[in-house]
Length: 222
Ligand code: CA
Image (cartoon, rainbow, N blue to C red; front, top):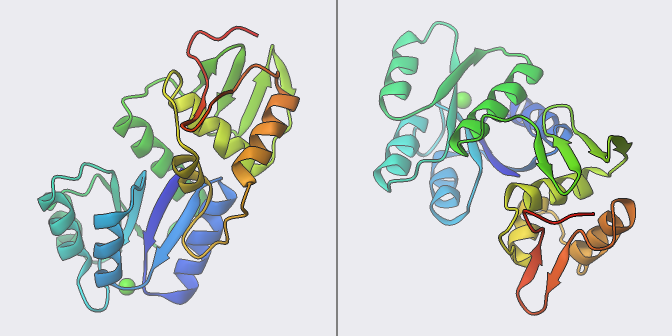
């Protein structure tokens, strides 16, 4: 799951990026409004954490342009405790939620999960396909009621495939879920992680559709 963080404060941005990576997200971090606007116009993100006070282009304007393009992705704004009018302006411009600085990283991660879940129309916290259950909040996977240990990237890959059960995902789409900008993409990483998932779960779980991508069938049985 790939998210965008827009924050010009280096310490705070760094902390948010680290915290969300810890929660299993691939995180792109932009430090000004113009870069954020460009990234949002070109990259598919699952959600945005948007500071309002930004250099080059105000956060509120980034948000207006985003909604002006008809994009419905969830936006969580960060505002100062005393800036009530900023919060009102942000919500009016199409933000879905806000947090007051300073905030707890755990709360930020929980609110993002809730926003992404709602945006996907998913009320069920637990994903269940083919005898596998995946709990995004607890970062836990069980197969036939037994816990399975996965690396963060294996987890992210399985999460993306289960969210899209029954649909083929291309290697490029899967790489987008795994890597943030500037992170080096290892050449056959997707194949390697899929190999590990098949070994840790069961061989026929993930189908390779030659020349197209990968798929977990919605009705696949172990
Ligand atoms: Ca700021």
